[in-house]
Image (cartoon, rainbow, N blue to C red; front, side, top):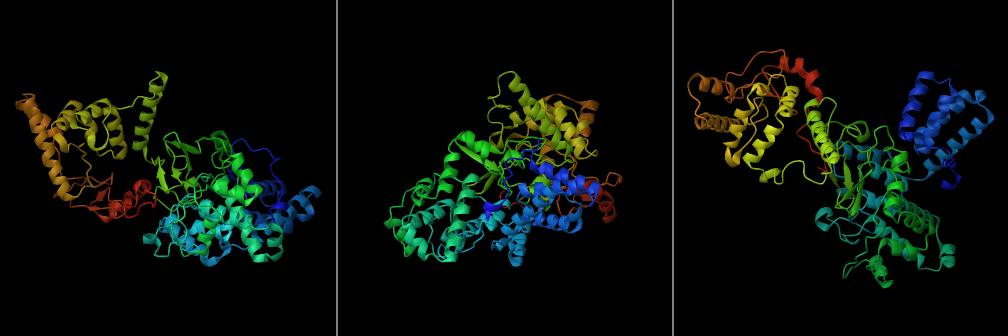
Length: 555
């Protein structure tokens, strides 16, 4: 089928890639109206290049039925070929077209299920997940749909404790290795005799498996992963692999045994790191290099990240549900451009790295990130980029109260800006930095930053922190020998108060007893004196309201 598809390689890539081109083409077509055939043609071309076949078929059908008489001959020929290409692909049998499968996949995504761990037993290899099953079935369209939804392409076959099924496929094998082993098995047979007796269904499956293997390679699957067979197995398939000496061979070695030129050529074209960076495909299903697709936008973000200078991790799928967990939007329409270090997927275990999410409304956090960016730029300009921005040991449990106090003093103005952006109600920006730092230094191993907008703290924790902070404040004024009115003024200004104001900025009501106000049931980060205040404040609070009852499957 693919041989009939128009070759788009001759069409130059737009400056910002085809995703941006599609967006701009759709906006232009909407403004021009359906009567503008050139605008419709521009959208169809982008759909074709991005392999969005259903959308392509729909727009071609509409254009040909309504505008055929207005089309020039070459436009008519091209649109009909676009239409034919779309229909040919969509005619290929696939679970991607199954209504029940679509509903099930949408449900899994909505409920934040980890697609890598969803059991989908193959007829022979019972311990397969969704992606592995699709690849072994030779269902290329469904496999690409799973990848586009965020699946890890090198995730190992599931263990018995995970799937409750008999183990057949080796649990450290990947989809690519297993397909290459199957193709290598048929490659050992006499091709002429085998082809004469091959059924149409088997021919379809083998071609589909080959297509899946080739696309996995172009998506960045590890071709050096080796097939490790169990010492004993009741599976005739596994024993066939063993008899032919496949145990310990890599996916690339098995591809050579399979004699499948398309697979071997794909692997050869991606031998070097430079070739991978330039040619590896975007995860959306377009089969375009990242730079020509979702990473070709106006804000260029590297589509890869090096792990320990030895492994390339690729960006999390732009069409998967955004891992921030704030909504149901796809990654590209949510946090794709709002990250200081984008989300990269480790395909071997499905984990994400570099998740630092910024929403447009999250101004306080943006200030912090911009500040760190300036520090990094300063380090780069002085040739000290390899040195840590903060002193060694100033992270996690290793950070002492003295280190924390040093960090506060160095970034006091930044902290004040963040507090003011979080809520103008905070009085921290009016505090004296020397007093604040002095209290932190005297908190000992249980040190913390006092925040007077402490809605998110549980009552028991809040009462303990309030007492600890006020004890540290008393110790500070005592150590400094401050007495009389000066002492009273400092203590009054910097004393921790367990009572909090209503989060609605237009309300002046304060709690009269600790934790009197009800917190937002969704994020637990703010509290209100009444339902009316919560309703009045919702428009401002909504962009920052993160559902804490849910978490990303990759977190």
